Length: 327
Image (cartoon, rainbow, N blue to C red; front, side):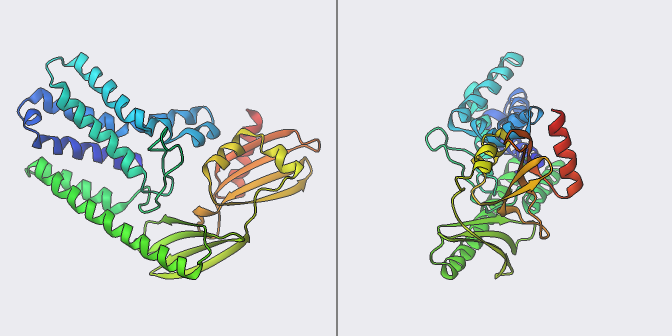
């Protein structure tokens, strides 16, 4: 989920914690629990600082180790110890448990969007991306805002947020059911499909789709239950080509390939030598595929520069390449 949603989830958990008599019965514990769950609800995304280094490092590692099983326990322990140093008269068990819940909930909800996370690493080191909930879901965010407002005007925070979470669980189940219907329909249309990727949008009845078979990749959308096809591309392994092989040594392209399961590639001859472009097919928007990896090489196949990230127009691409060149 996005940062804003994780923040309001943290506030909601702080309110929910008031159902715990140990938290509600001690003002210092109430304060510590609210601070702890707010930090815990953000902690797995502390790896966002990797953006300061470069896109490749961020893409390869974001939602990786900081969301993994060991960090489910490391984050609550570190945050609890920090709060204990500031406020020593705390019930550490109850405080740790609520912070653990905040960290776990952050990781758990991240599994349901198309970006996904390595939540079960190192036991299961692959990305888990269920593609059920948009990274920013208006319903979930607004439900939190309404509940926070009810708390502010006098409603009991614990019961208010407990009710809200029950509603959101029902909402998740409905979204899972809606996605399942689309999957079943696509499977009937493509019984030879090996992979079906769904990416939810802001609209409940609209989904981005990629269907991969042994021979083809179909880019489509489901709008009000109707499947619309946009493009189809032959599916084949990345060829043993000298230009592509040289480009694959680049860290940006390597990061792209470690993250994207559905892509196509294009090579072109240009004044500087060659350009290799990989395009993620899952994020089609207004006829454009914005998530790309681009590597530029000279005639001797030396890498000149590269970029991995979101590009929405040629001007942005030119600017990103210029930045990469300066680096």
